[in-house]
Image (cartoon, rainbow, N blue to C red; front, side, top):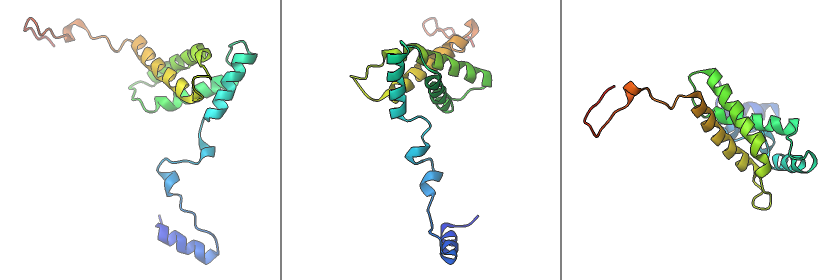
Length: 148
């Protein structure tokens, strides 16, 4: 592993230009490396609304899967199958509700689809049944009875 100064000196000896890639290493990527661009997503949504009578195309479904998969990495799951179930619930919601996007209100289709995905993750998690507590875990504060 070399430092930036060492790499810069090596590049000068070879007669090459030194390029500092610090920003890309901490998560900042150039515009060309974004996984789904808002302009492409917006154009595909408008195309599907006009030409396919509200049916999602394969390309649009792939974009929804990419967005949902990327968002699922921010959540922690104990079971990989739960993650996959939540992703498919989110993608299903995206396919169901993308027709409600109104381009006259906003041009940010990516934010609209992302919010649908987040709500789909919550819906998928509730459908898995992890939010329900068994009777032995409930605590009644009014009767001063505590059972765990």
